[in-house]
Length: 296
Length: 239
Image (cartoon, rainbow over all chains, first blue to last red; front, side):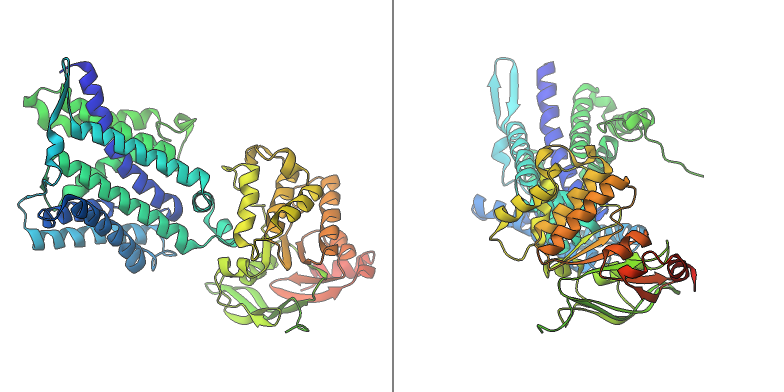
């Protein structure tokens, strides 16, 4: 493999993790809630792909996106809306509860063995250019990731709901006192989060079609680490953090000898610890190195 | 209900846990009036405003707008029904530009026509919102941010404008400019409820000023009382 190929693979996986990070950061922005159950939206979409494998591709893809969005809205409506004014720790524990409850549902419904959701397996074919061999799924990840991130930027910066979301993320109470509807901005954040989770499921199953009950959880935890490393308070820094963790994950996976592949996660977290020690406020937050939190 | 006051607060009680911050407060603001509400720090003024705006649930009492109860409504519904609040500390969105901050005023606006004309009037009152439209709001001075906050509230075309300590932290010359703008806003038919700590200037400015301390209304002052130091001191510190 060439260095260029490592970089392209890294950008592709980074784009996927950036989409997970955006989903997490949008909800965190308007609710100050770290939604650990976000990964279950990815898993739900992936299992939907498995269940609809016999359908025409377009319908199967659309249905899995729809399921992820519907489940995101259901989570907000049934659980998080009721806990909107609860202490942050209560809401955080609720996201754990939702995540573990849904994981149990997947386990009961589909069993611990992986199910194959190979609807987009044709994307695993390779495009060759000289010494460069790139799978179509890699190109798709980069293209879809860039398009969705650009679309999010346009939505937030050029539309009224985007302006309302940015205001709500900065000062929720002040935004409501101006007439910004809480349910609308929070609902939009969950819809976007669900949509991105669905897209992530499509991209990941195209690359790795085996779906297990923890399929989305693993990705989400790593993306969340990226979000914290990047800087959680700002959407741009959180997205860059998600991208960086995906990029590093891919790069380490390519560079490490296969005999040491089991240490990939350890190396990754070691890198995270070093970054957090050097820049505790966030890797992509201006002046992040100077940020300090007092603890007794 | 055309004869009903623009805003009436009836027997309002606000509790935080076991502590009563507002105790049985009643007052009225007539249509087209400028009414003041003064009191020392911790008197319960901001809690009263938060209860009016639906941001804090009252334990008892009622808030009526034009005779209709708005108790139990969400802050966004109250904002969209014609009451605009300029909160204490201004609460400008520092991550947004001046133009974007101003646009947020349109969220609570009930009618879409006449925005251009209103904007022109607001820009003539507060030129800063036009001159620095593309700047980050964080780069404005305290006085400029206060003007932006009032301009943003006015763009919602409210029937009632409530200002919570608009003079806080401002230089006297800036306070004077804000006061003159408020007079002009009131001349255009907007009812104003002005909440302040600076008693003398508020009493002389408003047609009627309620004095609040320890969560209760103590007395009502008129502009003629502004120079009566003894009465002012009694109103402020008697409990």
